[in-house]
Length: 459
Image (cartoon, rainbow, N blue to C red; front, side):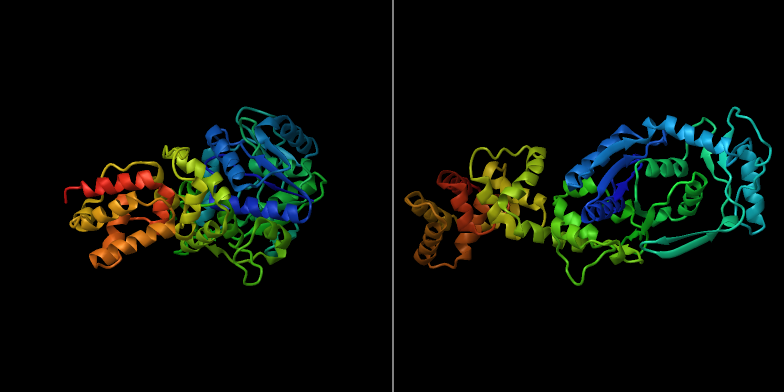
């Protein structure tokens, strides 16, 4: 059993493509088969190396490993030419000299009559020889019906009279998508073609090519599209649709994969799946026929769940990219794993976690002015706190908490009157979690330094 993911490198790896890759990958793993990556780069004008790199980077970040590939269609032109020539030799294809103008006029005439815009077979029986700008068209059968059982959609059929003679080689000799995909899937022994349902109209044409070449058909599974919250097809205007944009926004790859697998597939009421569970439970028959709606809030909730339950060491491997991007050096100062553990329960994304750990490793330029003018108006709580903490020998959260209580009792004030200015002194912006734990992790010297800076603030 073999499945494949075959993106065109004309942009980044988007959410829809990533879900297709995940479904094809999970099905191959479940069946103990092979998963193939193929780059369909025959569109020379739109294909770029940057897009190829983005696709490979996205697959790597998601952890969707492939057993074969990446294969590149541009390296297989000789094979496509041989198949096209075979079809020509067997009178299953022909050269066409129709100009763009003639085709446009034909299209307008048919549409004006309320008929389907189709090629009329003008050159089918002319027996033209190769020539400049002459395309090659496949002789689609005139009669009969193309029928196939789709693993998701069920029985699909279309009359051959609804299909025209598609172009399989352009005027410059380069092969077209419908030809290359059939040749590739046959040569690479793909048994299951799992792809988006935007390709479903191509499938009858491809089946006719398979049959003309006397090749066995693969099984087809067309996945329902992904919609935005407004019911329209997911696009850039719905927010980040690039896979790597989610990495940049602080999502974990396993959270995104978990979310993507639930877009159109389900297993009872279960929401959270490990990759191993996805592989064990996944089946094409459980894919919904209806489109799935993308919900950013649900993804964010899942991401928070994964952050809460991950080991600090695992989070650090994904945090490192963000730390490097923001030039945060964690080699000196608080133990990073301990800091991460202290932030796990309150961080929805890795970016939030980075914002929370900055205070342990970087000095801030200034306090939040509005908060400082309020919290540092009375310096007595911080002055007494600094004095008592400077004489504290056991630098642990419980001891620090006890000292804060002593200050409250001595000054006859509530905990907030000490805790709030202390929190601002340590963080600069008031965003800190358990203040005694923050102080323990920050260390005695840095804590006293921040307190001194707060006491010197001119409110």
